[in-house]
Length: 313
Image (cartoon, rainbow, N blue to C red; front, side):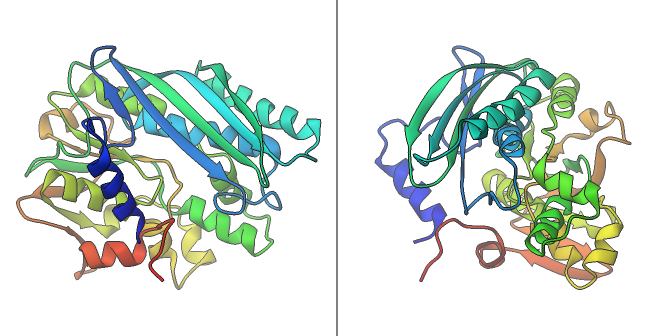
């Protein structure tokens, strides 16, 4: 059974599932966004390539990125830490050094959590953020003729992971993009302040193509993308000449933003920070034009290429 089937089953079994569907749940009565993500040793990270301090930073960054993708201000996190019985106290100290650094950077407070014993290292964080815009954000708010924009470069984190798995430590800038990602809080807030109506927004935690397809599906629209407009570091071509395009589209964990917004909002944004890569239209699926070759991302392609925790046997 695939991950999406688990999610559909969970949603069907709940008497109240109105808060499900986006990476953050929006609690309208409080004006708050809430999210939770878990990192599991040997699934999301390896202690052979990730230091405890890097793990603390990244665990918080993953959740703060969801807040950024809600165009909200991050406020608080809770931290649940599960550790093997023989773990050293210095390990815990270093994790919280990393956590503290990113929390200080984004003015976020740790307000509690849990500590338990386990066979491997698990770190699960709940993040809470506050809405600042009068308009709403969801992957289901894209409309035909909206403009598709992205922040930052794509494919670097997946490239960094590949290098680490190959026991390489250079180039440092690519390695750091995987180990110490930066949630795009400021750019999410700029989108919130520039909004002229409700709009679609996601982060690229599971990859750029993954986010585009999920917006297309949730909003019931087609999306046309010009691959040549997608920003990426040219060093990826040198490092991975055979599959750099796959890294850009499907690599994941760049934690950049993908928004589908009206022209009126796009005009108010800094075009150096928000790159136009395509347009939405009536229809279904995502179509990527790469030098006049069209790649269609439909349900079959998505299930084949996107990362899933649970694969069919």
